[in-house]
Image (cartoon, rainbow over all chains, first blue to last red):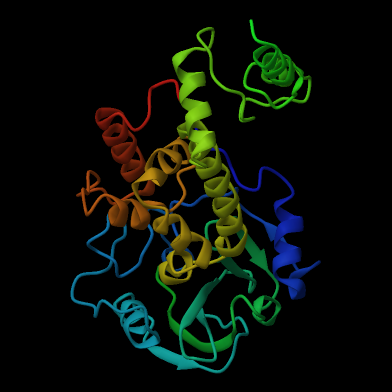
Length: 156
Length: 167
């Protein structure tokens, strides 16, 4: 049997780990280490996307450089229609958005996806999914800073 | 019996450090005596107790104490790793963590501990298992964490690293 970790108080854990998030989020799923934030930003919860294809169960789209970099991950999003860059995190009719959080050294650390209500959804590593009010609240020591927002036309 | 011989015998018996004194028996029965005290083994001791005494004399930890120490070390490192990496999605952040690397550094002795941990919670132990088993890869072809975990647990059962009832 898979035991969730931490077994309770996920919200307290989130608020402790991401100090800016307190009072600006709600938990939307239990602990699940079966998928990561990149998969979740792409709308999937069926696998952990990482370019370590020799070590199952990690998967990576065929043809994309096997590199956990902004350029390679941007290509994955481009293949899913997110081709346009934008400076605005506001809700726009006709557009769906994803955001990249990037470390000072350029390493991508986290991805969020905008919901139809204008809020954002994030998978916090192996932990819970949350809905958060804005993008700034996740910035900090763990996820670096907001570095890039991409958008695609809403799919019917 | 010459007087000198009588005196020698009497002197030896009264000496608390004499080989013939009951000092060792008193020490063995002392309430604070531990299995690792330097009490001479005798016939009433079991084989394992005699081996423990031998190891204690040579300052070699016995196998049970090594096992306990390894398990405690693993548990502590695993807990530290969980706390420090549970928020990360980047596998490099997860597996290059110092505690995770120290678990790999424990060598194959860590395999049963990892598998027992995986029975409770899948975790992301695949990288460590790949390193510790020289790429056994029983999860080849699995694309979900759950399937890969099941494949490794079956491998651990087949190889005798864990038993069906191990926690």
